[in-house]
Image: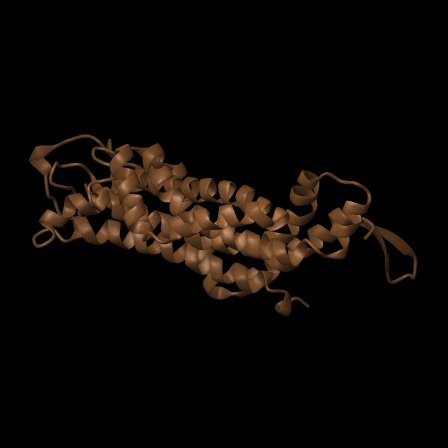
Length: 302
């Protein structure tokens, strides 16, 4: 199909509409459908607030999030300490705003790493097929036969704690999902007419895969990515809670949960506050994913 089509304007004059203009129209239509979904819009607002909190953490923090003050340990929320203090006397509000950086960064980076590797392997498997497809799928079967949480625990235990190690441990389980989803989508696209036209003009296999087929196969991946980030954040918190992943003195919400669990009976706010933050950010990504699924559904397009 040509990149330029003729469209009619009210005065009857034909004007050239480029593929870029059509892409902008599709994007605007998708966004309008997304914002009409109230729950998805609420999720988007929550996410924007969390991102702003993470970016503005040095401004919003009222204390040094690592500063230990034993005299003011285990203080309940007050005007001096909005969310109270932990057992070391550290201000929980300050640790929460810095913890948003860790949680968002780990969730996004681990899902991005899984997506990048999954897209490459899925594109190769879906386009080439045959032996290459079988080898890639059997490797995916091996990884998917192991529960994702158990796999992350094993890898994290082997690599140790830290941001990079946690990101790698979480991303491994997401690679197989991305590979299978992209492969399935590419199988429905690779035999369409525009792909045959690209082969007819002697385009290379790499160009056909990544220039022609891949852009038309990414809609399901966008939805999976949004939902996957929330899952990665929750899994990261779980690893930190188990003593893996991000550890003290770093301010990470899962690590804060692990520290506060020993004082939950007498100082429940030390667990409730980071727990609510984790629930909110995961809920936000899930609502956004549901909204994107509806907005990108071809059956709902006018």
